Length: 279
Image (tube, rainbow, N blue to C red; front, side):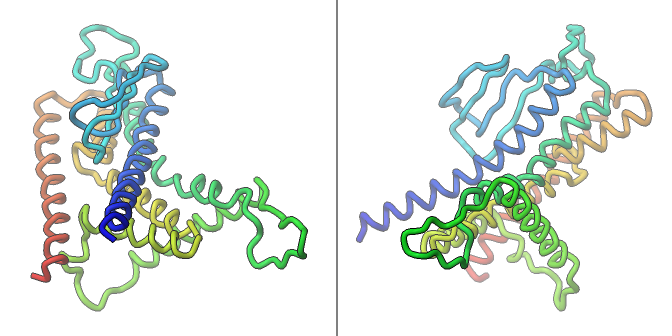
């Protein structure tokens, strides 16, 4: 029994980390593709923070897997050279504000679009459900075109369900225990994994990954400095003014943003503690 319990616990943790890595990779890939599309070189692409465990240089970028897989980043060329003193045409600060806003927005956009390919990969090649197949015959499989159509409908339905849940009038104000932090994410992941494993229907896990990715995309679009939404707002202001923000102004805004993000993280962790302890 202890051996079985340990195996289940390991499988649960690997599923949890695998989903986080997938969603973060998709997010950072959006930034990476956008940067390369507008002519900005990317020096490094990392999944995780801290000590680098694996690295490989491809297409001018060092691809890294780091010790703490609870986040990720890309490092565009010349990110620290605010005034582009090196005069590098591939520097992040060599391109205009609208292109920088495009780089910022594409990370969340990739997260928001992830449900479509997820559902497509789940459905393509699967036998049609609820079809009685004569003995010895092969069940007809869902083709590429049908899978694309079905995945579009399922993804749209998911967005509709989320919108209905968000806009539905509440009888009582939201309590802190309803926010959910890392423990809540793990619990939802484990619940979806177990249900998929028990029923053989991996749609439950795919639903959760899609929902989690959408959440990450929406959170990153919040207009808070240090988040993508904050970068989009600052770049938009610079585009309208046709002038960069002063370094000091940008630094102050980033500090304020970091404090706000830290506050959100504290609330999320507090939510986990309140829910688990029943305080």
